[in-house]
Image (cartoon, rainbow, N blue to C red; front, side):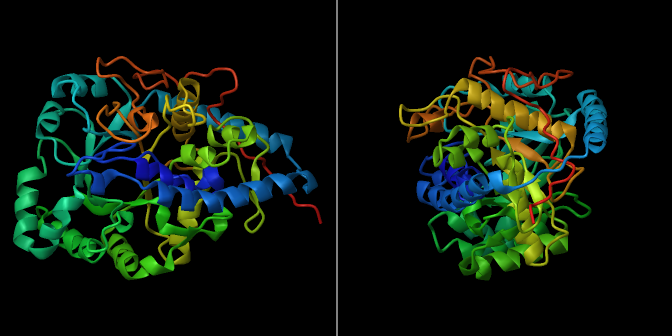
Length: 437
């Protein structure tokens, strides 16, 4: 999970580029012998991703004073009314695009039945598992919660080597009592530090797809770190690392051919950790800020999440994969950290996650792809007390092991994301932004 945070940082300015928490099996730093390779992010990859984003952010900030903004008041008011109507409609329905990660690097997790009861009391519609969890899946039988099922990195070689092994894995681990929306073959595998895994990724995905029952609607994909991006400064320049092309391009072809999504783990928290200015924090938390103009596209960005998402979109479009959807497999913010971990506070965690949920519910979309929300899995349901590393790695949970919330972000069914001073649920971008001649 530490890796996820780092990757997000590398995205669009420190904030735009920050990866996500280090997760071994589903969280900031899941680092058990069996899961660390599948779910943890490397600080180096996060830092690399963050550097590119920081430069863009700083350039945007320096040039802001020289730009003329021209706003059409009527257009802004009309757009806000539309957003308000969409927001109220979404509150009355289940947010099928809001999910959560379930990490297990802990020794104090609640019983499966208790976790299932907690999930069904919320508007969370999706659950990501880093590996099969038969007890929890059984407890969710009959619910409307769909599963994003993970194949641990350690299982990828056997699935790649043998169609029979893939068929055996599918028969043993794909449940029939709940909906499985997708299967992720590995987690951040291309940036896992194990070069032997990359050439085995596509064969494993192909064998697992062939092992699905006839007529199955389950998609097969894999989850990436933000470190797969070589450029994101500004978002319109988003591009994948050329040295990953040999492994990544065939996977992208597979996704397009089979209608599967591109899954990635952005963490604005790591962007902020690399650039702790007040304006960067506001940009990362969806709070009021001047916005950042992408001079190449003319689009104005009001938050880091949209900037990171659009950088990924630009990278996909640039390689000819405009039809491949994006899924945010992890994103979150720690509510606690070491003395040198700036921004890891309950207020900031509540602001980021709460405002993100409100942003998704509004269905305003991003500047590049307006009018739709992407499936997004918050990291994480619970803290994972056995994760190594800094305190923040063990502090991404929305809930404690006794099922009480660490902070309220409006996930209870029928509730709205709480608003507090300095927080905003929906930020409308300016109707027109004109650069000075």
